[in-house]
Image (cartoon, rainbow, N blue to C red; front, side, top):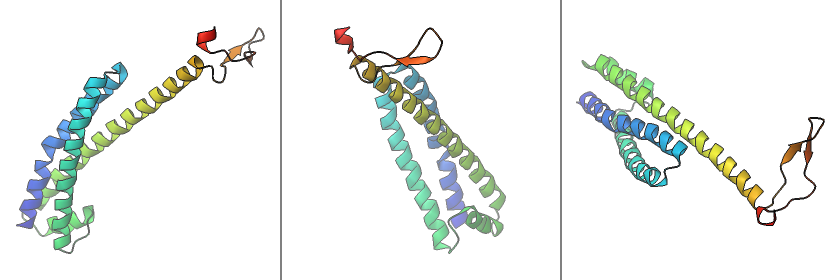
Length: 155
C-alpha cells in the first residue's frame, strides 16, 4: 500500500515539474527581452509549483520515514525490492529526478543571466553617475584611465 501511494505521489509530480520546466524556459526568454510583466507572472506561477512539489516531496519522505527507511534513493530502493511494483516505482522516480534536474539546470542558467544583467546595469549606472571612469585604450594599445570622472549630465 505504501508503495502504491509513493508511486502515485511521484507520478502526480510529473505535470507540475514539466510545467515548471516550461516556465523556466519561458523565463529565460523573458529575461533576455527584459519583459518585466511576464517575469512577474512567471514568478507567481513558479512559486505555486515549487510549493506543491515541496509538499509532495515531504509526503514521500514521510512514507519512507514511517517505514523506518532512509530518506534517500537507497530507502526507495529498499522499498522497491519488497514490492510487486518496485521496478515501476524506480523507473518513475528516475523520470521525476531527471525532470527536476532539468528544472534545476534551467534555474541556474536563469540565475546566471540575472547576475550578468545586474552587473551590466551596475556598470551602466556607474558610467551615468560619474563613478569610476572606464579604462580606455591609448595610442600604444594599452589601457589608461580618463583624466577625471565626469557624470553624463556634465558631459
